[in-house]
Structures are given as C-alpha cells and as structure tokens.
Figure 1 (cartoon, rainbow, N blue to C red):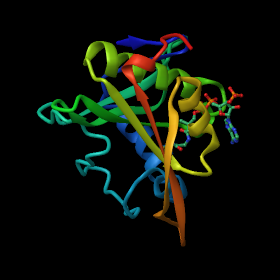
Figure 2: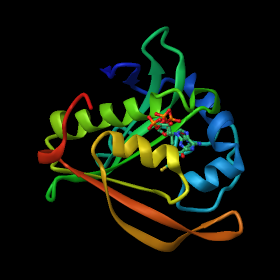
Figure 3: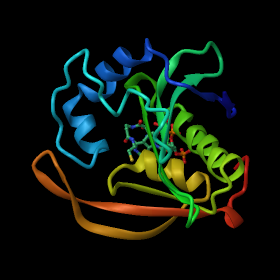
Figure 4: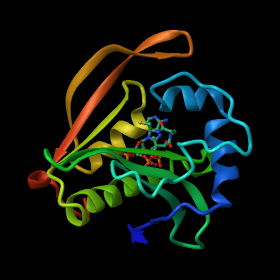
Length: 178
Ligand SMILES: CC(C)(COP(=O)(O)OP(=O)(O)OC[C@H]1O[C@@H](n2cnc3c(N)ncnc32)[C@H](O)[C@@H]1OP(=O)(O)O)[C@@H](O)C(=O)NCCC(=O)NCCS
C-alpha cells in the first residue's frame, strides 16, 4: 500500500465495488461531472471497467483510497493514459461524498505524484477538471500543479457546455510533502 499523511492507496477489493458503484457512479450528476462520456446505468453483475481491475492493462493503474486511521474505504484514484515513451500520465480521483472537504483529496494527489514520479519514473503528470471544480483545482495546486490552459466548452455536462482546466506538474518542479 502507498501511504500519505491521511490516506492509503491500496488494491481494489471485491467488496469495494458495490460501495463505489452506489456512492460515485449511480449518482448521475457526480458521474456526469467526473467522466468524459454520458452516464448510463450499469447492471450489478456487469464488469464495469471503471471499477473492475484488469491487471493486464498497462496504461492504467487503479487504486482504492482508504483512511489511514481505521482503513475505511473513502474513494477511488488512478493513474491513467500512462505513456512510457514520453513518460507522462494523467491522474484522476473521486471521494465518497462523506469524505470530501477534509483534506483527503490533497493527500491523494500527493500520493499519486509519489507513485508517478518515484515509483514509475514519469516526468510529467496532468489533470483535467471542470473549471468550477474548486476543490480539485486547489488539491492539485497545493501539490505544485500549474494551470496550463483552458479547454473552452470542451465538456457537455448535464445540459450545458463547460470549460475544463488543464493542469500539469513536472518531476523537476515537484516538492514532496507540500
Ligand atoms: C475533488 C475532490 C477529489 C477534492 O478532494 P477534497 O478532499 O474534497 O478536497 P480537500 O478537502 O483536500 O480540499 C482542497 C482545497 O479545496 C478547497 N475546497 C474544498 N471544497 C471546496 C468547495 N466546494 N469550494 C471551494 N473550495 C473548496 C479546500 O478548502 C481546500 O483548499 P485550502 O486547503 O486552500 O483550504 C473531492 O471533492 C471529490 O471527490 N469530488 C467529487 C469527484 C470529483 O470532482 N473528482 C475530480 C474529477 S477531475
């Protein structure tokens, strides 16, 4: 397991799946904001690629996020789009509603940076988020990510086009333990 100051990132367990599905992906508004595509219902037994882990897939590393204190499941995090030639990847995370606003998101980003830069030897990490996702923007900026651009009207979300902000962090600019 990877540890930060408040959270741990561990492998996905079978019994995480119904919790993550109910709390994150059955919530149409949350899922529509967090994903690039349209929300659609997923049957309980289906192998939803957002939740089931395919260990053969080299380009994506999914984690379940737990509280260090007690080990309760609080969300999901992943490194995706891993490009071993250009040595870059994207990061993504989603916390259960009850776990938001407590500093966990900032710590999850810190642990993903450690995994990307130290464990995987990447040189650039990238985040795309909706321009009104202040908690995500702040979580990224607390870890040294800088805003590199705005993708105007790039996301169709629940009836409107929204801007996305692209943030990047280079290994040479990263300071562990922000
Ligand atoms: C985005 C998310 C991961 C952030 O994690 P979090 O634990 O809620 O964020 P933190 O508690 O670490 O807060 C980070 C900063 O954002 C600020 N913040 C939190 N919620 C906020 C809000 N609703 N409005 C404005 N600022 C907010 C905090 O004050 C903190 O800033 P500060 O340290 O300068 O005070 C989490 O809210 C979440 O899972 N949201 C739903 C899914 C999602 O949006 N995922 C990202 C898709 S790209």
